[in-house]
Length: 308
Ligand SMILES: O=C(CO)[C@H](O)[C@H](O)COP(=O)(O)O
Image (cartoon, rainbow, N blue to C red; front, top):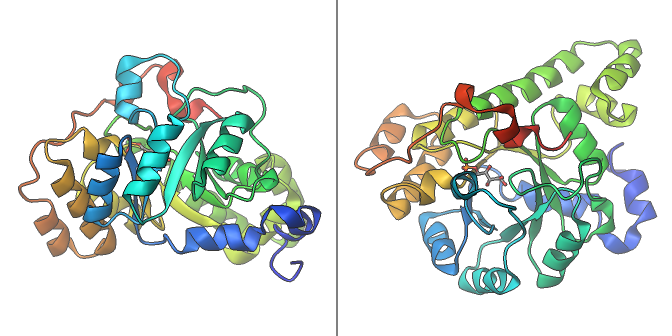
């Protein structure tokens, strides 16, 4: 395994029984260019699959409803996850709370294809994320900046999504976080090798990972964008800004015509650099979800602040 990359060797050899980083990261590679849709029932999962989603994400409530209803947001009911797995042939992801490694163990035992250790659910641990190397199931995690992304990768995440502000229907934070991550990667590339040690200290990330990103000019795992994508043009924007795919939740299932909007977002994600196709995909979609202005959102209601 040491022939892969600096971010993988010790983990694979220390945990040979739990699946290799190469396999886990490779699964995310297969989703590139696609849309991963939040679903809360088997019926929604079917709508997502029929619309062309590359995977679905099972959760208890879409983020807009978590915001509206409040309370503690947890892993979905196992029966619901089983139902979603049976309903579709595409990969099924499911969310665990940050640091709730027992929810993650349960999700792995249910046979989900990916676990999202997600800030959208109520964190279970205010200090520690789960040790993701301890699982055979790969994990995706959110990040608002490069240091956060690299800390999650050091813990074993095999895919990163920029966080955005889930459940707002407002793409502004998704843009901010993706630009932040891409901008910091660009800055690392301009440093000479002597400067990478100080950069690692500033990023609060392992030196070997920082060096790898500086050399590659990208993360060593797939980078998607999430949180607030609500229209075909939003999805295309994130792709043009460098996201390798998008997660969409509330924007689809809190809209007037979920099936139509889901298909339109898939089309725009595929043809993200063709304004004519995006224009056509944007026609006659019915009502978009009502959004929230992020500058009026109190700090305590910002999910992106969860995780560190
Ligand atoms: O956490 C997620 C990614 O795993 C959600 O799927 C995503 O953030 C949904 O946000 P929104 O409802 O704003 O589309």
